[in-house]
Image (cartoon, rainbow, N blue to C red):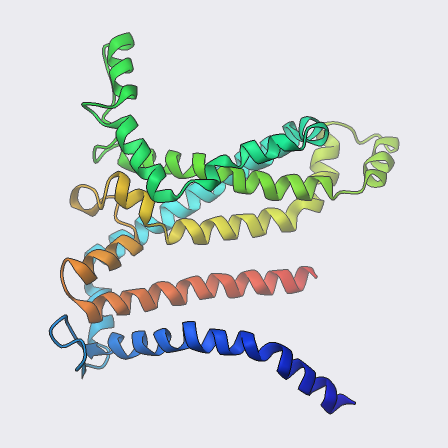
Length: 287
């Protein structure tokens, strides 16, 4: 009986295992080989073993650490803003969304647009010379900040990212808020917990696992951000808005340092995997 159950599990999971081996296993092996090889576009098919030189080059590169600091800061701030705004909207709009559920679909529309198109749209809107926002700010106040300059670009991309992905947090928190049993709220109301006290003592503790998971998901997504920032401002003056993904892209295609770029991507992959592992550990402990 036990052997039969194991065979059944093997048969059921074999398609997923084959998929992972084919689409993830082979590229991962190639990346690991290239990350320890001296390789460029001319020697792509004949890499020479170079040990850990590529990783050492990445670690010694100030641009890598600048990109890592940008990615960490960007991911932390955007994740916090998105979850704070999403949680507030989920609780504030709960009565309205309960009566008119179709409104939630409209609020999800920013998520439907490709991030690259969002970056292009805001590049046109905020452009210093042709953008409508600077135009009207000059028209009304005779002054307008340079949204895409080196000093303001970071906060511009933070706002753009937050506006696009707050609906994701809103969706998660709306589902979590609705999942709280009405009996719990009624019992807490009988005990005198109403309004903010009920929110702080009942609702937020029950929603805590969802809040943590949403923070981690948005942190990971923000940490590996590429397309909207690259289209909006590129790597910025002196690499001021270069995320790790942009650093890897430019190292690969502009500098032709394939081994170094792949080594940096392995570092990014290991970091993301560590965060996912921590998320999985938390979910198991919560379960």
